[in-house]
Image (cartoon, rainbow, N blue to C red; front, side, top):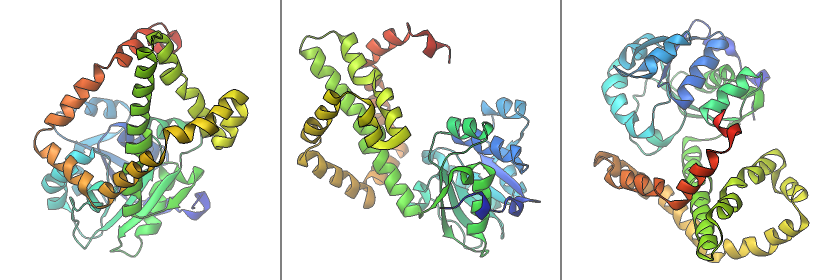
Amino acid sequence: MYYDADADLGRLRGKKVAVLGYGSQGHAHALNLKDSGVDVVVGLYPGSASKAKAEAQGLTVLSNAEAVRAADVIMLTIPDQVQRQVYLEDIAPNLREGQTLMFAHGFNIHFNQILPPPFVDVSMVAPKAPGTRVREVFVEGSGVPCLVAVFQDASGQAHANALAYAKGIGGTRAGVLETTFLEETETDLFGEQVILCGGVSALIKAAFQTLVDAGYQPESAYFETLHELKLIVDLMYQGGLTHMRQVVSDTAEYGDYVTGPRVIDDHVKATLKQVLTEIQDGEFAKRWIQENQAGRPAFLAMRRHEQAEPIEQVGKDLRSMMSWLNAR
């Protein structure tokens, strides 16, 4: 783990950093670097709706190609599915010796969608939080943990320079963990699919439908299976599983011990291993790349289907009466 004392922000002094993209991660990286005294420009595609927002927040906006030509360090925060095209059209033709190409997620490097030339450094600084949180805690004087990795070290200084970047966005305030592009990519995809997004979503929907099918009110089912989840996750976030179990009732804790393993049984564990295998051997990446190349028909159909799920309508109606949510 690396902290503030292990990183030298002075390594970015006299250098220009281009952050490509101004979405969740991009805006946080650019603004945090700017507040850290780093010379930052934002790269966007022509007509981007984010241009006015970035300029209003005091940032210089260039086209992606112009930003690459102007920069010493280029950080890609644009979505995985468009990185290859942007790289081929705007980045690769404008790269020069001595530059650093950085990523906030390793997908396109690990799965060979982007093949950098040998004369640039290739590194990664990946915050372990959404960009809104990266910005929020930086402004408060803290930071979120980050991962750091070096894929290609043409200069011999790639690691130290990556740590300087991590310090610029606040990562070394919380701690920066050494990793590899392989480990970051495969664990990130696994976590998203089996817990953070896929697993949790599927479990919530199945539990909600089980209660509704048994005759309970959809509103009661929503509160029990979705709404209260945040309370439990917050407790885990603060102090792990032990802290959560200390705060909930003994009845809930006992149910945790005796029922949790019945829900996540050997069949589920076998499925988790299969999911990990499909990530490791590139099968998932292949399917996702092909889906995007085909215009995303299955993905968009699944999105429409999920948005029409009964739990979503029930939740929408209930949340409309929660003024503390509407005020955010």
